[in-house]
Image: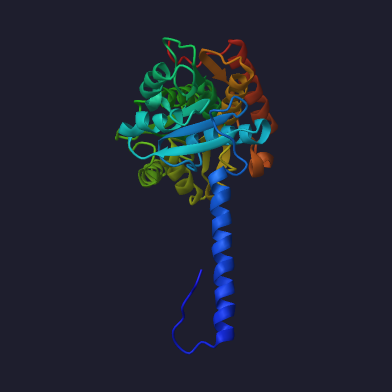
Amino acid sequence: MRIKFQGSFSIRKQLKFQRLLLFGIALLVLSLALAACGGDEGSCADEDVLCVGVVTDVGEIDDKSFNQSAWEGVQRAEDELGAQIDYIETKDAKDYGANIDLFAQDDYDVIVTVGFAMGEATAAKAEEYPDIDFVGVDQFQGAPMDNVSGLIFSEDKSGFLAGALASMLSESGTIAGVYGTDLVPPVVAFKEGYEAGAAYIDPAINVISTYHPGGLDVAFTDPEWGASTAKQAVDQGADVVFGAGGKTGNGALIEVAGTDGAYCIGVDSDQWETVPEAHSCLVSSAMKLITPGVFDLIKMSNDGSFPAGNFVGPVGLAPFHDFDDEISQDIKDTLEELDAGLKDGSISTGYGQ
């Protein structure tokens, strides 16, 4: 290579600059060669490589709620099973199928689709790609397929415990729930369970329940509406607010955090870990343990024991964290008794009956 310089450079400076430039070009060529070789990652087409992809519902992977919980289960598969992982954030519901195609065409072994709204697209693509296992989070399987496992939960039971806790904590006799859309059965289950648990403790409790009025494309990504709805409930006397609706519910939690003397309850995961802005009010969360459920199904797929149909994941209340000393032993004992009754069937939430 010959490089011609113009200007007042000395011969020595020209030679030094030329050597540096050649060294830089050599490094660039080397880095491109390594990239072309694929680094340490193997091909998803190889039998000994486990590739797992997540297609989110409309929203972001770090939504501090539903999508994030599923992704954390996949990250656990990376840590414990050596899986190669990736995700696609869905921006528009019409792209569900196309996003699944991107992973399928790259020979992924397991595709995790997040949310009830993705159920139809998941079933269609599972039929198109019978050699790929699909984990459908919150997707009840009415007509089971060999390569689809619906990860479902008894949200009504988790909601029941949250409602009982809210009722026992309330001093005003009014509590509230701020929800995503009633087009999603798990959201309805949370609401119905919350109201039933509150009434089980105090039949005279006043519960203000509000669903987001929008469709699936906006109902879980509207923290401003969640905040304003929570404020309205607090203005009407609610001193405990349950936020159940992705970022919409998070908006409610954060709004309540700015209110003296009010508690809030999160949803899906232990939101103490994901919504620190709500720490001043966040007494607990009505959990459905998505993260371990997703991981368990990925592991079963990798082991060759993937279950078709529905896989029921565990539910329960999150720890009380900084509020532990404020929760009386009587309340803790009552919650344990209710949990036991829900598990053995001696207590019913009434949901679906």
